[in-house]
Length: 82
Image (tube, rainbow, N blue to C red; front, side, top):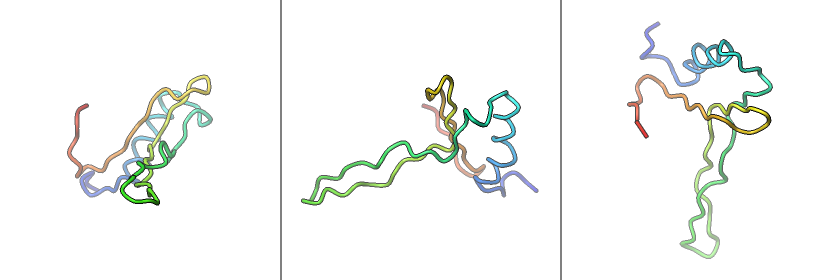
């Protein structure tokens, strides 16, 4: 199958998870689909509803502290540089 046709979950399962494992990260130090924020507060009304939660695809821990965040994308999403 062409990589362009793979979903984000398929990319994670076939490529990213094995690469993290092959790099030596023990399963106990890798967390998937971890919620990072509760969502932005929108104080436009009295109830101040929250926006959407932010999730990380992978968070890598070292000595019980978060060290790196890995974000997966499908092959149809343009890459961004920060």
